[in-house]
Length: 256
Length: 313
Ligand SMILES: Cc1cc2nc3c(=O)[nH]c(=O)nc-3n(C[C@H](O)[C@H](O)[C@H](O)COP(=O)(O)OP(=O)(O)OC[C@H]3O[C@@H](n4cnc5c(N)ncnc54)[C@H](O)[C@@H]3O)c2cc1C
Image (cartoon, rainbow over all chains, first blue to last red; front, side, top):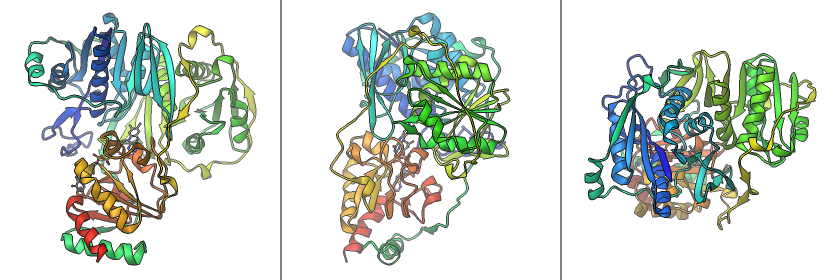
């Protein structure tokens, strides 16, 4: 069982996000980066599938500048067997099709049985990479999987539908599946894992040499959204705020 | 035809986001054709028969009796190849996330998803955990767009007339590789969130499982139920039947009192109909404040215990 997990490095949810001078994206210098939280669930699922089978290989794949090697190492420390880094200095993360083509160029000769991705990235939130990749590689695909079950040459998945509905689907391997967050409890790396990860192989390939297609979409501008509603802002002293909220609940909304 | 809207079947009737997608497509301008797929295609099409559409195409086939990513992406691909629309529009739903990227890759047409509004610069979507908005554009001749809930108002659909036409597709058994079982719902909890009059909603800003009782204590004092954002449910701090949002419940209480909820779009779609919204968040720029009537900038862990005391007196 050979499994590829795609992990992305994104700004952490507590990080500062200053808009850059050209307003084209954020200034990344002061940003703290983390593994995209949804991808952490995909990684855990890959490790669990391998452990349940008792055999196999989990390859942690990431795309981006040099700093993304950190999330690959983190994946290796948790139990990934080796890593692939697609080096990409130009920010192309706003273009899902181009990203998928470059991932596909690297993955196609590896003959993976399963490609796992998180449901979307916390930065651009395009939510397409796993499905695009599946189509390019000729694999069946599914999204929002909340349970996986390998049955011989096929995979059976519980998918989340809207409004609390679920559905089981099954299709043959090889396949590309995007994982819904929350289906498992991602592990922390052990000290032994962290030490061991240093010796594991990370292969680096240059993104621009993989696929020369031109960019098909881009983010042109980022901005803070404008408030539309009349809002009473209450800040400052806690006791004053508490009194005001109590008054709102009693006299304005009349719930107490 | 300039614009193709792909409709979604929501248990026999048209998905609300498909109606909004039609409204959005009409706003974009040009002639709009709609496409209904599957065993209910005829009735979905007739739901739109009194609106201004160039044509409504229906596709039925034995292999399309239930949804599959393979089947639907193949149908939409064949329709695009035959009709060459400039723009393909869908609602941003779980189903379109599941199959539209396949169409994008098959035909090499970029897919700009999750659009919340149109601006002069392009299509606006939320980025960086909803902390910022971004405008996205494409120079490509054709593109696929998905509109997030409430990006457009279905009451603004332009009425008029249209004709319903069957479209023939070629599908063989080998093109649909998956088998799917009947959809089902898991056992619901004992709380009727959707009919609760007052909700105290707890987000990741509560920081730790040990602090979650604060939400329950506050709820008790004001006679509310407790709801939660998804990460709080995913962490196992609160039962899943309490989740509000696109993958949880849709609520519209008299009071929605949120504690440390950021206001990501997937949460907001489930609660924006609330009559009064009070939010406590330590980040003055939190998106939840945009739709709040009362925006309390501060630490929930500090404010809530004091508020409970104040309300008890
Ligand atoms: C397909 C899909 C479906 C989804 N479905 C849902 C859904 O149904 N429901 C849902 O809720 N989400 C859903 N999400 C997730 C959603 O995108 C957000 O990640 C989620 O809503 C964020 O939850 P949160 O606001 O609790 O956490 P965060 O975004 O982490 O926000 C925490 C907030 O708390 C504030 N804070 C931190 N500490 C304090 C403190 N001490 N005092 C006061 N404020 C504090 C922070 O400033 C921040 O604004 C879905 C996502 C996807 C992609």
